[in-house]
Image 1 (cartoon, rainbow, N blue to C red):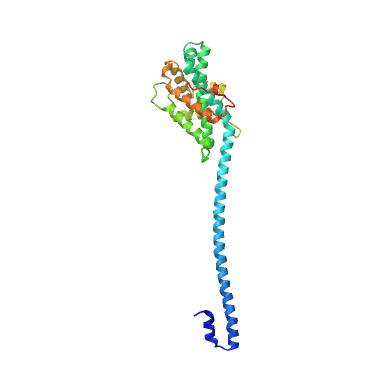
Image 2: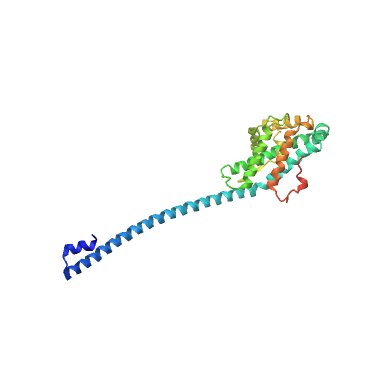
Length: 266
């Protein structure tokens, strides 16, 4: 039995009663419709609020990604050039050691000045590379790499080079533990205002005046000892030089700074 039948039963079937029933029916129906509309509005508002929160969450996620990308771009823009030159200088020296008999000529049989340069400058080029990679590691350690393929590739190559320096599968004196690599890198860092930079060669040489830099002294001694073994025992340096060339490809893919002729694997 519907609502109108109930009202008719309650008021009888006269014309006046029917009018009253019609009026009350309209009132009840209107009230019921109002309730339905309010319920519908409530549901729509709840769904709308939920969609708004979902949209807010998505926008915040996009904003975080954009902020992270911007920070990475800023770091790489600031340090890509110095890192590129450090990588190039080190791989070039390693190439000369492997293919041009640099150690044999200058560290083994050169003048005292040539021997000093060959030993200390080679150690400096290794330390300079550690310095710039440590600076970049410090700058990006709190930034998620996300989908930035270039930064992730650089990080991968850096880790592979770290592993090559510290592995004991090579029989040569230039084995440098990962902690020592980072320690040497830290010793090479200088702060200018709010920006980190790496010591130059002159500042590097001054580090030895007091004789207190044990890590750098150990590096110098390792370079000296490495110059006294045959070039056939430089497999570690060869693999590192190859990885440094791969890093050049990432940092300077179009060969703007250093062309293909300047990035040959030994």
